[in-house]
Length: 81
Image 1 (cartoon, helix red, strand yellow):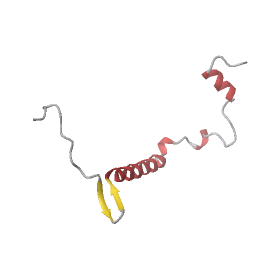
Image 2: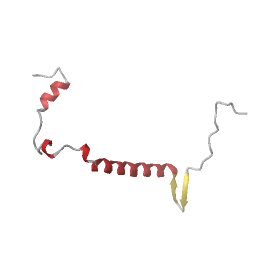
Image 3: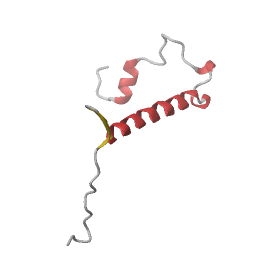
Image 4: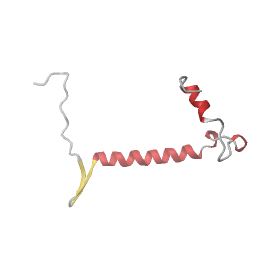
């Protein structure tokens, strides 16, 4: 008799479909669904205009907003001055 706190492991075949030597596993379907969902969600976020800065406040390519040494001093106080 099993104790009440334990559940028996289900006997599920890990192979969803097998055609000759090619076998499709359940976890493979999970990977594919996850990758497709992430791709769809990223496309949806990229199309949302509320997440992007207006054209006037975007920095121009090749320019920086501050020197890297200034940012390093803010992060690490023991840099050489």
